Length: 168
Image (cartoon, rainbow, N blue to C red):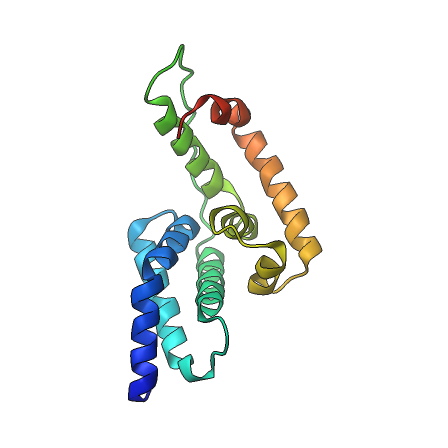
């Protein structure tokens, strides 16, 4: 990598690493795994930096998504789910309970469905960009989003009610 490319890459990493780390965390569900995932994706990006035109952030996101899917395929482990107790009345801990329930439900989703939700709602990307990142059609993004939300509703039945009452 020549000097100009190195400086350009360093500026990109400094400007976007925080946002990319958030995406990596949502994909992995663990801080250390997120750091490893982002580092791996940035290493791959640095190797191809001169050839990346236009939107390097999309390239890094795609690299993170692909790497995480490969990790999920290698592991194939199940996530244990604890049953949350019911609470009476308003409790400040309800927001924490909601976040934990949502996190556990997201971790229980298959990799593609979780990635679609992360890219669509956490990253707030349009369907077309999600489709480009995931290498599928817009229709697939729509159907995966619909199925993922339906599965979240199955896993956490009172999620909609809890979201309405929580002040997050």
